[in-house]
Image 1 (cartoon, rainbow, N blue to C red):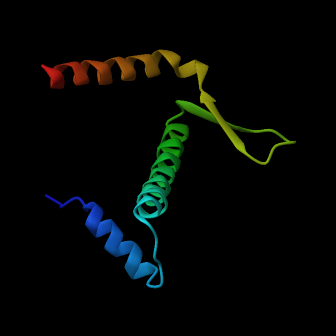
Image 2: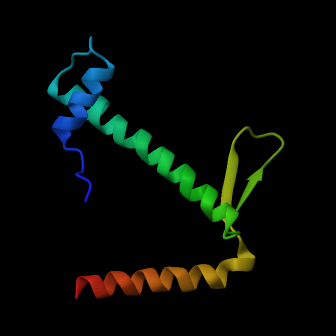
Length: 97
C-alpha cells in the first residue's frame, strides 16, 4: 500500500521546488497546500473528462466565438449514465451499512 503524502511532506516538496520561498501560516495553507491540491484536481478533472468523452457519455463542444471547450451530457446516453449513477449510489449505501 502506498503511503499518502502528509501535509509536512507537501510543505517539504514545495520548499524543495522553491528553496527561496517563505510565507505566513495562512499563506502556506492557502498558496502552497491549497494551490497544489487545486492543480492536482485540475489534472484529475481533465483526465476524467477525457475518459467520459471517449466513452461517449459526455460531449465536448467548441463554439466559434469561444476559446473554451464546453462539456455536456450526451442525451443519447442519459439512460446509461443514470444506471451508472444508480450503481454508485447503491455502492455508497452499502459501504455506509
